[in-house]
Amino acid sequence: MPETDLSKFNNSWYKSGAGVMKRTAWFLVNATVFQNRAFPLVKFKIFLLKIFGAKIGKGVIIKPSINIKYPWRLAIGDYSWIGENVWIDNLENVEIGANCCISQGALLLCGNHDYKKPNFDLIIGKITVEDGVWIGAKSIVTGNVVCGSHSVLSVNSVASKDMESFGIYRGNPAEKIKIREISEQ
Image 1 (cartoon, rainbow, N blue to C red):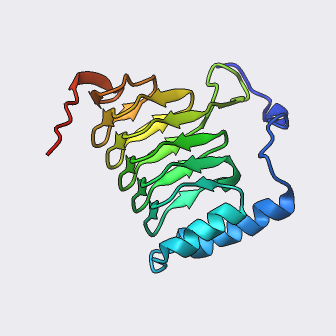
Image 2 (image 1 turned 45 degrees about the vertical axis):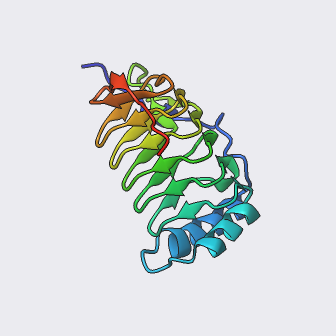
């Protein structure tokens, strides 16, 4: 097995989009307000997200005990819902459309490491969740993925490539299993 010089592990090219003071302030707010299960005040959370640069639509619900890496890289459309224990690890921009549901324990993961490189170079990619998408509980969406409008990622699935509009996806890696039909009742 080849030896690796870990002293070369350097991702200094990465820019978070904010200075050290803003990142530190956000770390404290995220830990005390957003990750706190006993803090249910949605309007106050939205106010804080906007102060830190997030773009948040009207009627958005943010449940307790969520983790957001960088709010200045987050946009959420009108009437979307972010469930308990969701982790938005947005090293890159995450855009969530209108009328979306990001269910309990889901992970939106913009960063990864290149296992082919001896120093595991950082890889980042944007995530786009278009209008009407449902990301099921404990599912994962990775960087450079577009979840097409009204698509569904079922419980405990992993989307590592784009999901077609109105497709229902399941598994790891997620595969399209059928078409979502929406009835007007």
